Length: 361
Image 1 (tube, rainbow, N blue to C red):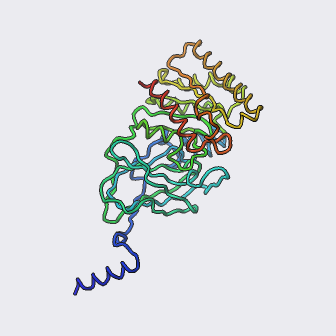
Image 2 (image 1 turned 90 degrees about the horizontal axis):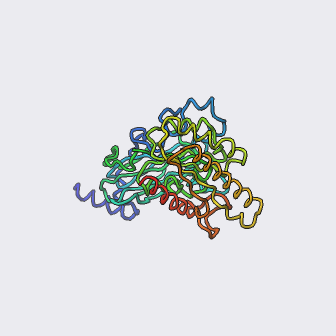
Image 3 (image 1 turned 120 degrees about the vertical axis):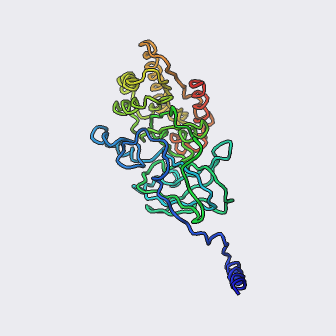
């Protein structure tokens, strides 16, 4: 009789188009149980932000508020679930006219396939409070996951959902390694504008390609050589490399007055950590806009002069990357002539990867 009832139920479910796998209900686990990579410090007001609490009364307000964005932060865990979901609450529910919602405030899931981190799917936001199935119908085997958080919004709460009969645990693989992290300081491009999804910012691409933690200190419009950020970075005496990508946000006066002092503060606690200075990308619309062309060229020349001055001052282990080939020369790598598409970020990551591997070899 039990068999007959079960058979009838199965037939009804098949007629309704309901797969029996859906009987496994979703159980959510607070993400605070699992490691978070990409933070410069754990001394933040809440878990999913980038700047330490003490900077609120010190740094400029725009820098502080941008520090609430979770760009570069990623959750690490493993599970044998067949369906993986997420709940997340956004700080601001931000929207922009030149960047996708998935990049601004979505989640981006990757899995380790034995050789590299492979894209799985995105958690697409639709409101300030979100609950989404990211992937389903998987084989129930253990996988290591990397879940990237939003680039241009903050998160106040985050939970990961799995099958009720599955498990979720802390990662077993020490990938990406958190030894000698790469710390990137810069602008909106550094922060990830305008990647279509969080995994496609150049810092997150580098993190996967190098399998090494990359800390994102990009502040949209506000990578202006604030000395307190240099001092914050200098506290990471375990850093493997500092990448400075600030030129689009500074003027000539700031370059000439602040570059050397910013570098001195950066080297305050460890004078051997390599530093890579990166020129501004050559904006495609500058091929037509001569004012922009002249400004970018002049600022890049000024950066090179400051770099040469640092060499003359006795600085060692510092490096310089031209902007000439950073995003290619076909003019197809931006959304708006300035901010990068995924193609632009891949190209930039490729150039940075080559330079970084030479520096760290």
